[in-house]
Length: 395
Image 1 (tube, rainbow, N blue to C red):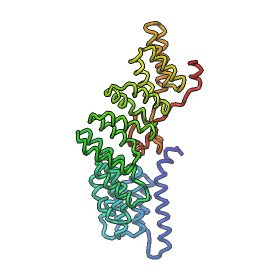
Image 2 (cartoon, one colour; image 1 turned 90 degrees about the horizontal axis):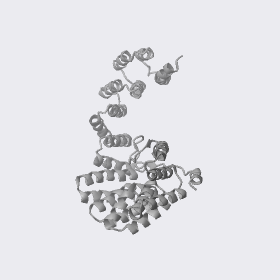
Image 3 (cartoon, rainbow, N blue to C red; image 1 turned 90 degrees about the vertical axis):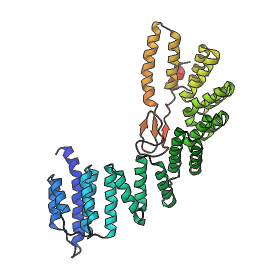
Image 4 (cartoon, helix red, strand yellow; image 1 turned 45 degrees about the vertical axis):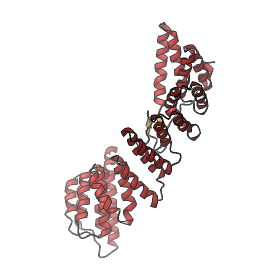
């Protein structure tokens, strides 16, 4: 049999297994029997007649605990296959029934909320979940799905409210998530020019995570935007000890603030210290550019070569080649430099990525929330490995 058909039949096989198990359970209880209509419905499913099967299941007159579970299983199967309309019809039918107990009705409501969420009907899903939050057994599941909805709709205040509740009674720690949500609100405040409110939300972010890197970056930006560059530099430089891997993200801001203060000496001292902690190409670029401004192109080129010898990476080699290419001027050798630079650049751009430590998602830019698994603060920059061969070639 074609493997593709085997994959298509797997969900049906799983559902049929559920039916058989439920039937066996019911056969041990004299009063519980699976109606023949369910087997007719199953036969339609196996014969690729989902609409006919759906009609049979929805027309079932009597429901008990076993047959309700069968409905649930069928609805879940349709949703997992992407047939949300069919799943919704089944769960809406269960919710409207008067012959099932409250526990099953609540479960059907939660399944229906998941159908609405999958279909993008967030308002409908939210209304059902707000009702389910009042039921202890469904509170955590309802809050987690609500958090996904508010995250999707970027309703950060509501997301904070739900996250704080989850953090209060859930076994999982939501403090890191709450901190980033406050940072999202602060970012909106900064864009709208409401700096006092931004400052308050950044303080709340630190309340839940004292080492929140994003809050450090925002706090420094806020100080610089208010003209307090000395304070901004002090805030950003705390990353040297708190999270040196993020220094490359703020080096341009720090350099700008030092230049506003007219303090190139302190800027150079910072850059030389930062490179020892994180030989990020952005930090190296900034230091070499500072040297070029103060001492000329040749001095910048010599310093770049020294730095690449000490911290040999593909990025560094690319910088040296680009520098040598500029020095070659219009000679034919310049074309060779450009060709080599282009080849290495492709490798560098492929490697200069951010990875999610939770799911492995890769990106060429920093996301505070992973686009893959939606985890907050899980993206980290992948450093290119040092190249021993480069040190020999540049010697």
